[in-house]
Image 1 (tube, rainbow, N blue to C red):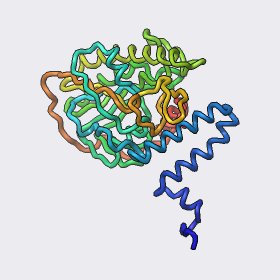
Image 2: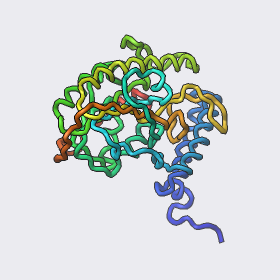
Image 3: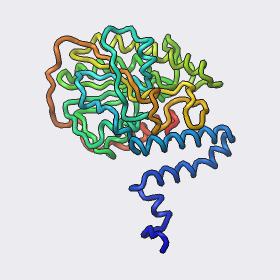
Image 4: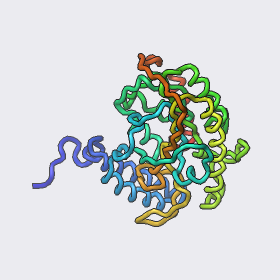
Length: 319
């Protein structure tokens, strides 16, 4: 007797959200022809490489996020500064702040996985979050996440795709003043692309001729710029401050089993360059007196803000 898959047959099995491996496989396969048509066989091979590596990590560590990673809400801090896509080794090389450098394992290789893995089904009414990254706003209702307050920074760079790091710093200082008895999360978009120079001038969304040296230089300049702003922010914060990252970044490393160069941060690839993140502890002296209180943000996100989030994700290449 043959296998019986119930209503919908094999197609029903593949598209069933309870079988994420098959669902993801179908999604990836559906994109292959379009990738080949738009970008040619080399980019298709890169896509196959990412897919093959991803399945290894999905089967070993989990589909939605890396279940072996650190849960940031369970760690000890008063202020948590997140540098988007900041590698541990790069932070170690260029950071000049005084403190103790440790490392943690992220719950994802993308911001989406990081948010899902840290905030899903969590109520953190002692915490406020100000961000230049759109993923918490995109996912919070879907994953049943609750904070006391969440706010976006004004996006005033690269035609509204991201904020200048100085804008995030100014917004975070105001947010901290408004919530002196809350744990504070500040999420900068840098060193993630798009790229600025070390003077804060816009350079490019992505290098025109990307190669390991070109991408690393652009990435490093972004990191140096944001670290200057972090230094300015830390001086204004009260309590124990930790600087970390949502995930790391690939800068042309070759991954197995298909050793093509990879850039950025593909979903579900839990290699060291992507999930080993800095955990830099700064002792700010007297600790905050943290209190829980009812949620200040009422109801679902309004339509205009939802569209704004989608526009930013599209501008960053995620939609």
